[in-house]
Length: 187
Image (cartoon, rainbow, N blue to C red; front, side):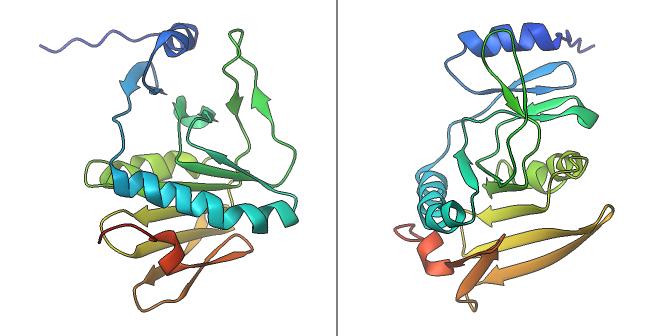
């Protein structure tokens, strides 16, 4: 019989503060995040660079993967690959200084073989409970393929799929060349 010891949010934040790796909180369980491969890291850097100027002009902020996100409805704290906020950021204050963003507007996840199913199902289902979330973007790391889920209303999402036949990818109000997202990635 497998026994799992659940931890409190306070215990999670204590562990997170001491940890050398990213730890997510999943309804009482602490889950260590695996390190990312080169394609994942390059795509993340490319997106950060390409989106920065557009978002800056729009008064938005793009935040990389060290930003903790609170998903209260699922009792989760996650580290998305990139997060975009255009309104005033709202943070849940932690006693140890590891504040969690509560109002992401666009979340971008770069999927790998080991994360794709989780990113596409359980994680997306939880992210949908965030009232502030307007878009969820899944970027494949093994082929030129980007999926942008845009919130149409509270319970409806519209999916736009971009692949090698597409030149531009629209994320929020920004347009990014697909080739720039995958620049220097061997696919």
